Length: 294
Image 1 (cartoon, rainbow, N blue to C red):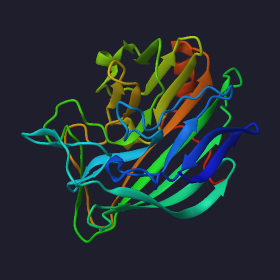
Image 2 (image 1 turned 60 degrees about the vertical axis):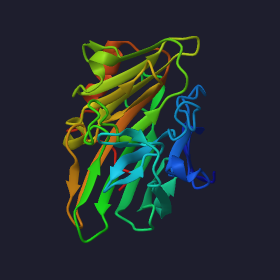
Image 3 (image 1 turned 45 degrees about the horizontal axis):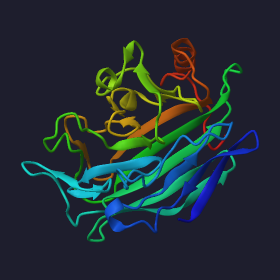
């Protein structure tokens, strides 16, 4: 896979952005961040894992875009379950509007199996040191703006909107590396069953094993904050937002859907108080630092 950009914090490479173009069509090839690392060098992402080869680091994917699979793998079909279909789209890098060591603004084309382009995307990604000097980590921000490129409404769905309750995955997704002693929480809720599907101000994944790390996520805007969290621990390690948790998102011609995260990527196992303090300072209404700098 071709490297498109590197993100650096304090002179260290903390994430690599690759195009994914050489991946098999059934994986819904798309640009993504991998590997993502802590400042101490711990890898906190995974790509093309054996259990779900279409999970690609940190990025954006949607399983149902007007019937096209831009997530990869089998498509969930109402009344049939997960089914292999020749319906996979691909997301193509279409250039940068800005790029430096701190981040980039990228243009992307969502190309369907038949060659049509239902969506165009503008993706803003940046990396910076956290405002809290007591945190040994860095911050990743990823914002996606999906614009309907057709003259008709475009429907963004998920397995949940097609009949599989609780499987509203799609939109922002982070595949984690194999876990040994993981713990996921959102506020007072602890564990996969309690956190999955919850609407909460923040989500934290902590690895307590021999090489510990912490990821904490908050939304960058009110729309993302209203989406339930998606969490998998037992089957595989992954976290994300549910863009279409129950109902499809319909995008009118020329309309845009925007979603975004801020993430704290830290070495060590941060406790609830530290994560909560960081999250309060990064709630959607808090003033962030734009990228590119103005």
